[in-house]
Length: 435
Image (cartoon, rainbow, N blue to C red; front, top):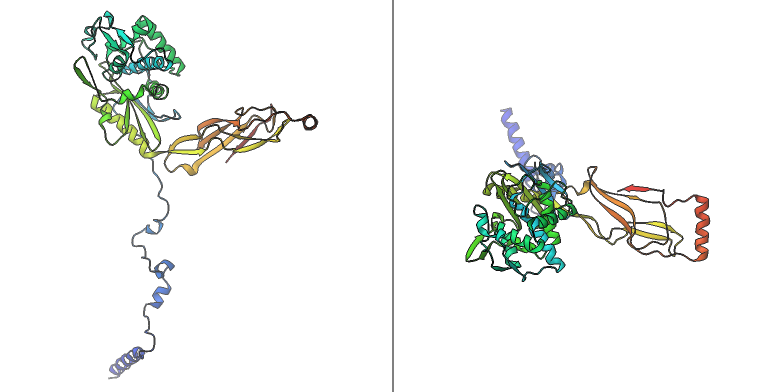
């Protein structure tokens, strides 16, 4: 009975506590709980529902995966603008370039066109050594002995159809002999820094002395794009018809709509396999890829595509230093100005792993702590280095951004006195700094 009374009293007390007039505020039974909740929850924001969700606002780190690997002899992925290798496998291993040789043949022709010593409308009489029948088991553009053909058509036959006959015809037209033309090819190879390359013919048919490397072929592709820009668009043409025969460019990636591939050359030899050098652009970047010794036409295209996608997906263009802007200044003695601004003539653009900008460091080294007039604009006064995780990515000369003339008699005399007593030596002092 007593128990029932206690329950009844408790119930009445509870009811009484809620029996407030309409004019009074309704008690909030959840007030205490909200008082203990995070501030964000009090403002109506949803509380985290999953473990780790509270950190969702923090920057997501960019994870760079391992570079792709292929069943091929060697490969290289290169940043076009700096020439820096992004990834590679056996890049300096000796290989036989096959029809990649024609990149150099076309490069030589392109340089003659650029110099004005040759014109696309010039006529070439086909010699017997360039007769298409001499190349029955290889690629050709089907030219005939004694016929007259325009330089432009022969050049398209070399680049698009990979015609061995067209290569020989142009070599003899320009140099008198194929051997003479090959000597020019090797001269250009040395000039372009192709240190492990030697050409023995103009078309790439197998010869032990016609060799190169994946790295050198990428360098050559880069040179074609840079040095003969009027010729390079021919590498993007998908087909060419000559003598009633239409032939298709063998570079499969020209049809790939997911990449902006605009060249450059294929090659194949039974002794080597399938070779391909390609180039593509995206977001201000241009990459050059080279794959040597793939097992099939399809695989060499897939391998190049994987390299290009790796570069575009996981690297970005970064400009740590803009050209023409003073990065620092230094005192000038004996001049009509007391200081000179130092900087780069051109902006320094680098390809870096995505998300690595905070780890980039820029340092410089000067030839002297101060300089003496006169100084011409553009005079190299030091060097600038850009590093990522203590690895130098690029360097560039630091130059005087303005001209400093000689000062007047009195200012020069005063500077000479100061230099005498301070022992200033503009040739021996060195400044270094990193930021």
